Length: 425
Image (cartoon, rainbow, N blue to C red):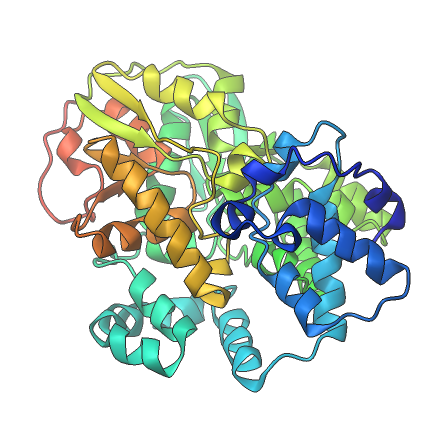
């Protein structure tokens, strides 16, 4: 915990109404201001107690407070540093240690995650039982998509359609790659249609986002170095990321690897861009065809707050002829996914998910559009609990892909191969 960063907080309280846990419970110590106060106490010699660790664990790391803060407090760095301290000094209960060990042995490794696709789907039927055994296991079963698309094999290189305007790398991700492979396929097609050669390294590995956000510093650095090396060899103008949490972590690689100047320099040489951010900078080239559909756009916290990317996705969606964009109330409040938060803090995550689902359903939109796989699963699960059935969820890339290829809007939110779609050549 950096004492100088802690001193930047003037305790003005602008963060309070933006903090999801403060909104839920109204407890000062479950606000950014309160947590920073606890951080200060610890740096001054107060031992880390179980209660203090509980308040830090309850933070979603959504960074809404960073957006709201008029003093420029680096709460993002502070909470990452604090979680590393918690992991080193706090002794968790055996059941908590077991759940965390399971999650970090599974989610950052695509082959292991692939092997769990079917068990997680079947686990939805046993969700009430698993909930009684352990709330985290129940949450894991509930979050599993109803239909997991068939794997999509992407080639190492997708050539640009028409004149080449850029050469980019594509991060395929862990959860994105295994549970939403159609998003990666759509991303590659959109980039190619917009004139990009798309390099897709076959053995990318995890970017380290989940580890970084959970205080597992050594593990996060290991994943970061591997990712930097893979894309450094790709000789690309930019690395395009379509998962908000991954993108926000990759943009901080130089800080994550600051203890090793050589690796920090290599990380700093990479130009990391979210898909919507990159397309906005590139400018449109391909023709947008009409897509008559109403969509509710959900701001993923690690896109809107951590990366400051809010207008670009909306501008891309509004540029699609026939598409009606509907805003979700309380857009700045987290849905409760927050990487592994909905697994480690399932009760608080459920409260936030139910709140978000209510506001999404109130839009009456046909499709929910999100730029983060965790958000998509979290909100879909909450909509099911609310009796809204299986909501159609799509990524910004899928909407653009449908428009550029002239597909029927009915394909949005459907598993590939679930039915034939009208395509204009």
